[in-house]
Amino acid sequence: MTLMTRTMTPPKPRATAMERKRQVTRDVVLDAVVEVFRDRGFDFSVQEVADRAGLAHRTVYRHFPTRDALIDGMAERFEASLAERGFIEGDTIDEMVERTEARFAWFDSEADLVHAVAVKTLATGERTAPSRRRGERVRALVGEKYPNLPAEESEAAFVAVRALIGVVGWHLLTSEGVASQVAAQTVRRMVEVAFADLARRDREAAGKAAGR
Image (cartoon, rainbow, N blue to C red; front, side, top):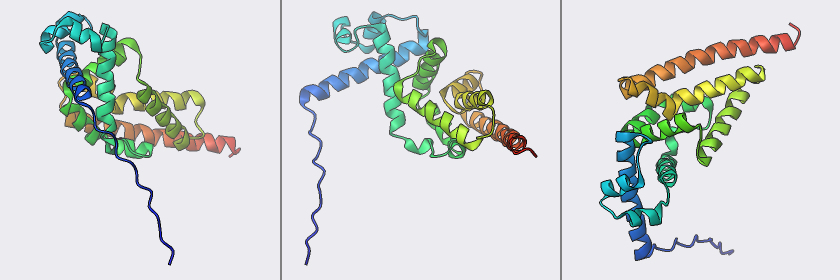
């Protein structure tokens, strides 16, 4: 009888007391950043964050030496939270759209953080590395779904879909007083209508290419 051997994944080493304390301090600081950003937007100082967190300026500085580092830390927190909820993404562009309600519901549960990330994106045009990777994935999926569209039309469709079903779309609609659930349903219907039109245009382009 052949004995089967199983490869065991070694357990991750437990964080030391110092590492746990450091993480707790970072979390307190980032909580304060989200609150200050909510109240003041980009017009805040490291000292204001320290005051809101109840920490000394030097303590905040050890973790986040600049205001930009604080903003980046806030975006990283968003990405970490989003990574834990892969179910709101989907494997195809249709699944991504179908899960708009679930995505917007999570955005609503983290409203201050998501608003802050959306404002940062709109103000700077900068995206985190995970956000850029998601964007490239959406771009590729749109291209696969409508392979016969001219490149500029496919790119415009990608940009519109990414904006509508992501943090920017949620932020713009809810900031105008639209309830998150209503915003999600509206966005989903708009994108589905746009997809139907894109599918028609894609078929027409394919027909022209085939000489029909």
